[in-house]
Length: 68
Image (tube, rainbow, N blue to C red; front, side, top):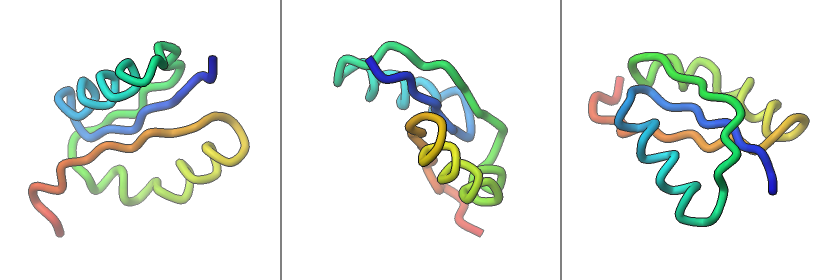
């Protein structure tokens, strides 16, 4: 089974990401990248893309409730 990384902005987004992966049979979440707010995710999107290309898939979940 493929290991995954999840990138989220808060505990709720992390729970959603875990649930989505579990629903499709993925339980191996090796990396959790979380910091409050979507700004962190936006500033690191290129890093997440490189990680997904070279290391492991990355599931990014954000709610964009306060788009800047």
